Image (tube, rainbow, N blue to C red; front, side, top):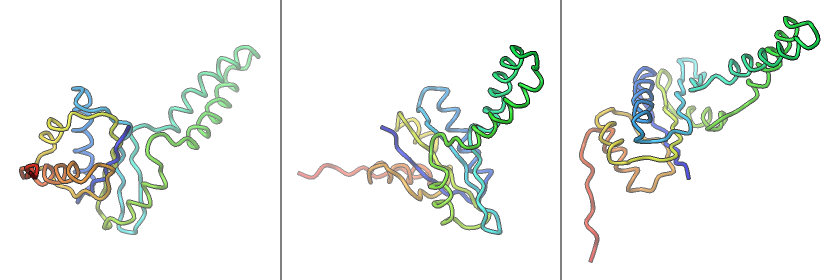
Length: 170
């Protein structure tokens, strides 16, 4: 089961820095990300989503390949490539992978202009090592599907303080 975490940061650069840190942790097998998107709210209130993967470009490349291949059969590879790239780009633009774009835009509407939010869909995590890696990064947890204790530990790590662990009551 995946967990969703949304963290607000004062700048786009800081949100991108934390996303890159999470991607580096993924390469070390400390966590598995389903998606990581930086949403930026400009001074006019417009929200831009910086996705990890550009589905429009990927669709265009795949479409151009298949269009060229089919075009070769009909002795028109350039026309096939152009038609394939165009249809692939349209298909890619209509594809929504990972976190729902409308949800991200609606949630990012709550942040202040000129700031950013990092949306992370986590499939698996080695919590203690990831929290240690995020210690002192700043940011405020806006939304999460984590339980209250894990959410508090994440917020404490971002703030750079040691999370208080409650002793079990007798």
